[in-house]
Length: 87
Image (cartoon, rainbow, N blue to C red; front, side, top):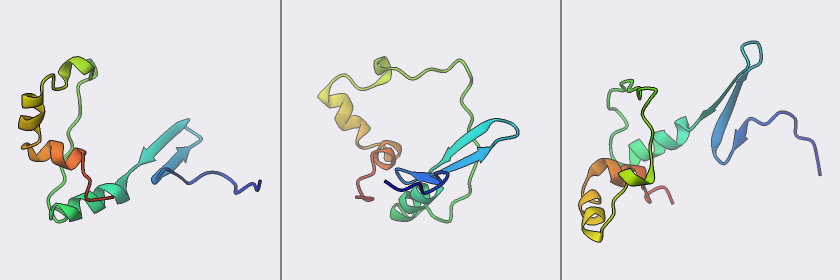
């Protein structure tokens, strides 16, 4: 085993640290760029979309039937999130 120093990447994500404010960030900027390129959206305008603090994701929000899954597979957003073009 060899000490490679402070980790800068893990599982394709960049690790950013700010010790003074005790902040740790993970970034998938390169992966997102590849997905945007795959869907020909590389030159689109970026916007900030914040979730409200009380919003929680749960299994109850996911599709329950095969019909719902088929319907969601037609929604471009779900195709991008479940992107297999990156494999």
